[in-house]
Length: 269
Image (cartoon, rainbow, N blue to C red; front, side):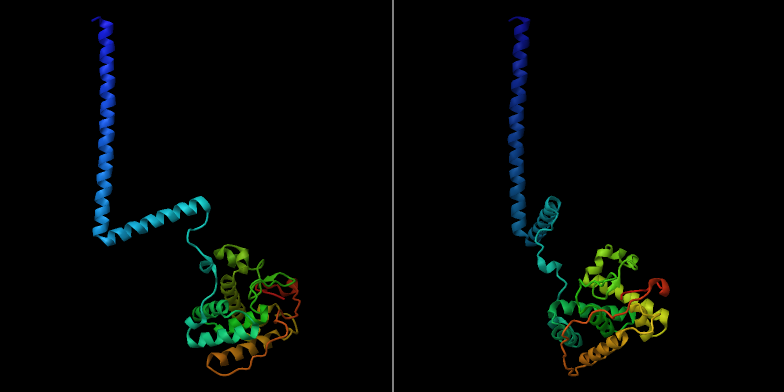
């Protein structure tokens, strides 16, 4: 056998050894994977708590992949995005207020219940009466979260968003003025500042409506306080007649002079 033949034969042998080794490793690898899968299956069957944990991790991974690929969370439905609760889940006083407002302003009780609950929570933190906040929403917008005045006051509490844009930053920006809960929280903060600056509730309400330097507030303060009184009676279980307004109460007909008032607390017109 020539040297060339010996080299050729050695190369073939070397190649065959590599191929045989590859198939053997592959075969053993598949067998190992199979054993691991079988072992894990038996373990999960024998220990339900491990199976549950594995399922939760798998669901979490699948949801993360869904968000990454589509931009939407898997399994999210409309109820996860709705600002509404069942009024039957509220405390008795809050439920009474929600049902009364619902009938008077012809608004569904469920979204109104969410606003009532939030008003009571804000009231406990800010020392503002929740029925006062609800009365302001009633007079300002008739509980229309998308209301906007001619001068740019927006949302439930008719906040001058361009004046109070800084207060909406933590809620995502000025468009949050049309989110009911965000608008209510910012409105309560502004009302607090108005009352503190004016020194009394009545004077604070004049600041709030932008009539601090006007002789006439268009009856705004009287309307708010009257609705506030009615809501307090409803909350304690009194029977208060419902006079459905022909038109939902909107904004007081006051046209404040921004330059004359020189107040950064101007809310609406």
